[in-house]
Length: 176
Image 1 (tube, helix red, strand yellow):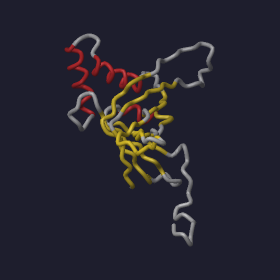
Image 2 (cartoon, rainbow, N blue to C red):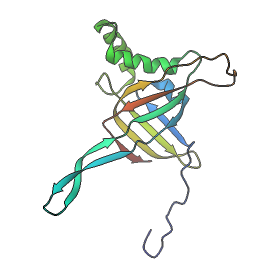
Image 3 (cartoon, rainbow, N blue to C red):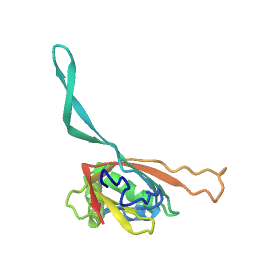
Image 4 (cartoon, one colour):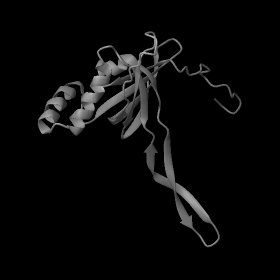
C-alpha cells in the first residue's frame, strides 16, 4: 500500500472459525478446541519527573495477557484428563513418585526437556482453509482448568465444554 494507492493487497477479512490450535503436550485438546485468543500485550511507561510536568518514556518490560481456550469434553474426558495430568505432574499432590511418573508420561509428547512446559501453535486459516499465519507460543503452562458440571435438566444435545488458561513467555508470528 502506498500513499497513492490506499487499497491493501489482501482484502480478505479474518474469520473467527478458521483456526487450529495444537499443543506439543496435549493432543486431544487440539481436536476439541472451540475458542482461543491471541493474547493482548501491554508495556509500562517510565515516569520522568520535571519541575513543571511529569513526562513519560516507553518502558522496556512486556506483559502478556493469558492464553485462554474453551474445548469440548469427550465422553471419556480424555481432553480434560490430559490437562488434569499436566497440573498433577507440576504440583504432585501425592508426592514425588507421582510427579516423576506423570512427568514421564506427559513428556513423551513434548520436544523440550522442560518438564512443566509445552510449546503451542495457533494456525490461522485463510478463507480457503489454507494456513495463512502461525502464532507460536513458547514455554506454555496451564494456570487454570474449569470444572465439569453434569445437569439432568439439560438436553442430551448440549455438549459439555471446559475452559483453560495458560501463561507463556512470549509468542512469535510465523507466516506460512
